[in-house]
Image (cartoon, rainbow, N blue to C red; front, side, top):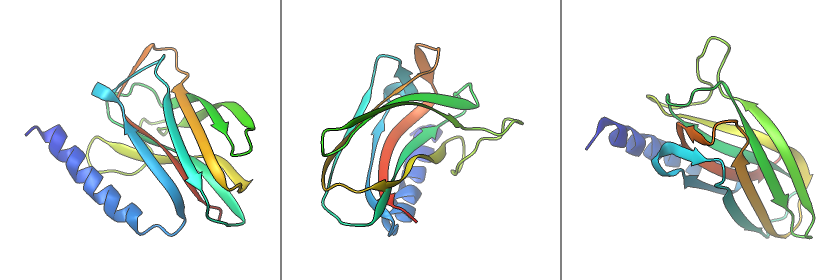
Length: 156
């Protein structure tokens, strides 16, 4: 087994341990990017059914990247469809590294995990939320992206 596979398993194990005790989490899901190469025409879809009542919720984008990623930021094209059928379409940018090149986020070894706040303090609607994301970078294939996720949690 390669060192990369061992590190991935190790990271996933600890990530599951730490996130399983998270009382703020309402929904959370990740999709692996095949061969860590995200094609510009590949969008990633998530769907969550929310029946829990809470005052406000936050939407977050989860990102796992490795050292093959060449940039200190990332642009996403995001579509969020609410249970009432309304659609919000955004272009968002997130910083992934400090100016000196040090990766932001958590993780052991070459893989870093970031939870990026997309929308905060949203009124909750019971029903199905649909989330679609694609990258908005100039490269047609974005190397070094391991996983993309979407998370809904109670606002603090």
